[in-house]
Image 1 (cartoon, one colour):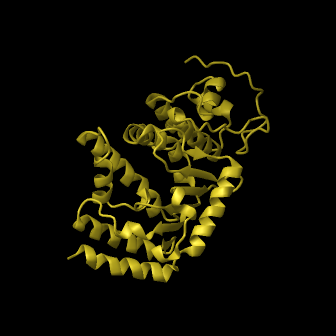
Image 2: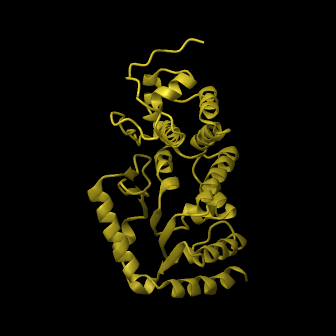
Image 3: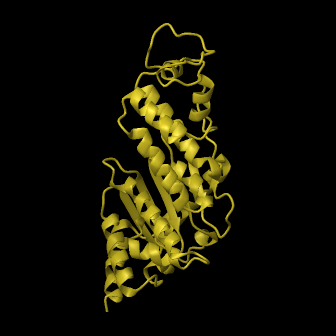
Length: 300
C-alpha cells in the first residue's frame, strides 16, 4: 500500500496534545458548506480525543496531510468510504459514518437558508429565544410542525414529510443527559392562533407545558397587557457556545438570505432586546398557569 509522504516534521512522541503549529479549524457558515464544516469539526475532535496527530492518522488511513487538513477545516467534502476508514483507524465503530449519513440527510430535509444554523444549535450550551408568532421549532409537536410546513408555498407532500422529520430530529438535543439551558419568551398570541386543528393545539400546549415544567427550560409568556413593543420587529434565538467561542444569533425573517450572525455588535444588541422583552414577561409560574388555562379552550 502506497503512503503519501507527509510534509510536516515527525513529532518526537505521539502525545494527545496537538502540535503548536496546527491551526484551529476555520468554521465557514456558508449554508452550502454546513455539512462539511460540521463533519470537519467532529473529525478533528475525535482525532484529538483518540490521541492522534494529523500525521499519525494519515499514515493509518492513508491520506495526504493536506487532504486531512482541508477536511477538518470544512474545505473538502468527506466521502462515506473515507469516514469508514477513519472510524476504523480511530476505533470509533461507526461514529463518523453515522454522523455523515445524518448530516447528509439533514441537508436535504431543511431549507438551505437554515442549514448554517444547524452548525451551532446542537453545540449550544444555552439558547435564548424570543418568539413572536408561533411555537419555536424545538418545542413543536409533529401535528403543529406539519401544519406549518405543509402550508408553505409550492411544497410537496414528500418534502413536507422530510422537513417535519428533520424538525423533530433537531429536538434530540433536548433529550440529552445534559441538554442546553433554554430561556424562552413567547408572545401570548401563540396560545390563541389556530395552527392545524383544535386537537393539534391541545396537544401542542400540553407539550409546551411539559417542557416549561422541566428543569432545563425557563419558559415565560409576554402578555398583551404588558403593552411591550420591543419584540415586534421579529423573532430571534441567541446561542451561547462553549467557552472560548462567541455567541451566535439566528434572526427569523421572510428573507431566504443569510439569517445567522456571529457579529458581536449584532448579537449584543439582540441580547439587550431579549432582556428587555423578558423583563416585561410573566414569571415562570404565572406563564405555566396561563398555558394550563388555555388548554381547555382547545378541548371544547
